[in-house]
Length: 425
Image 1 (cartoon, rainbow, N blue to C red):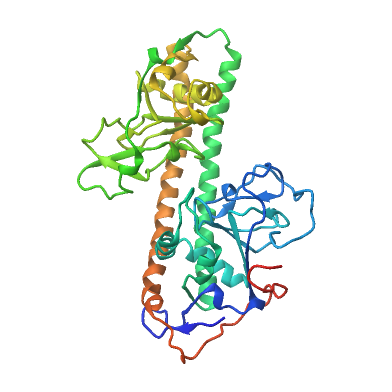
Image 2 (spheres, rainbow, N blue to C red; image 1 turned 90 degrees about the vertical axis):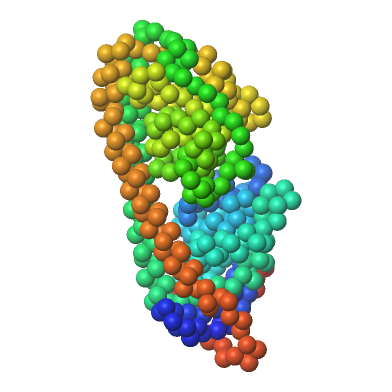
């Protein structure tokens, strides 16, 4: 690898400016997937859909792939870095033993290098600087797309292996802690789901009532495109909820949403309101922690009596597919408050609802606390990423002089010695 040594301050004297393209071919291999993203969903295929939050999430297990199971250039190996090239451009995840031998689709770029380099690239791609550089080169004829060649040419700082090891340990501990919180919060909510299901099964004689009789519902308006990210709104603001914010949530509790709108721009619903959206796999619901307003294709739902909240939440969660069936439009995304209000739900007597609230409220309190702690950890992670960007700023602004001395950092002992070239097996 050709790199320039940084002689500035901030403890980055030994950091080097480089690109993936400058690495020797024997120590760096990059390629993209070979299968179409719309290939049949089967075990052994990794697409951009499955790469998120630094991990590969697959609904299937095992190593059996497409009919031709012979290794080829897009066959993933343990220790590879899988980078999303389409839609969520720049998201990256390590390939673990679970997905070694699987085949990547064309929306995935594969980076294979010495372990310390791969670990650093996964961290670097999350920094504000890397994200901004990727966004500058994204094309969007159909979907946001970044080319693998852009990633090869993108300058990045490379600290010494011992510094990378320290960063890797810090980020790994943060991510492991977040995973533990998410799993514990999910179990708490699932236990509340199980209690609801058990009570409903044991008492089939309970009456049913239209949701509109026990809760207030209103369909959201407006597009998310006109809303600023995060805290960009000047003056008092409220959370603005989009359908995307509700999809794939681990639990129905969210500390803070991505978007905000002026407090007087729309009707603000109080904390504890359900925000609901749909797609073919069912209903997706979040309970707000702050004043919020729904955007288009999101329905705000709030029970008439706050003590009925947990029964209503778990009743809607148990009828997820029924909720999706009352939605209209392409991919069942257009849900209206009027249609939702007509849907019949199981509604026990007030004493039963109160008992259910008293039993499940501690479970939701635990889930909310864990979500809050996870948000703090995410904040710590973001602060570290901003610090890396700041340290790398001066280094990346430098242009290497033609006759400047080149520095070759040490390679880790188990590097990809069999890899050749940039895009061929």
